[in-house]
Figure 1 (spheres, rainbow, N blue to C red):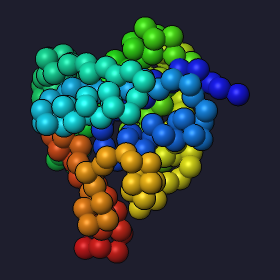
Figure 2: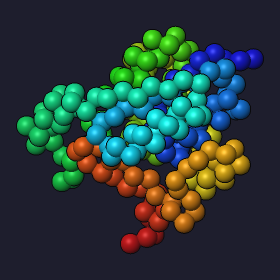
Figure 3: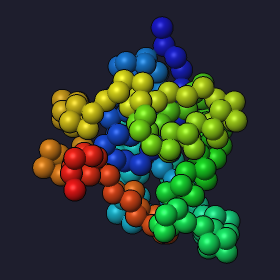
Length: 194
């Protein structure tokens, strides 16, 4: 039984790129709409996400919220001395704004559900889930629900001709916006690595 339309919060990275064939094959969605939200990440990333979304999904949107992100999120955070253990909270600040834009597109498109590529490890899943649920949407989270590893995702992407810029030799994920950059993956995720 087919499940209609799903809107996917899309960065163009490994997790969200792999979500597209997973949403078709394992979840049975008829139509996948990707949405990339520009919060000031490098232009090459925005272009890559846009091109990849148009190539792999049935429809794609790229939404520019850089000005809103700075005015309504970053400036208030600076005024409040917002940080976590001395680090700027760029990723944490960006997620609610990204999620709000995803909900707007889901409503516009008449989607039945919203999907994201968050794993079950971090707080991003909570930030996305809260906003998506408050918009009245059920959530599909393949990475979390299937407990996928980056190694499995890389192999799956290769098997399904999904272009990805990571490989076994470069297993890192970088999240960057106009306020901060965070890096995860590979040995950084190993508690024994010092």
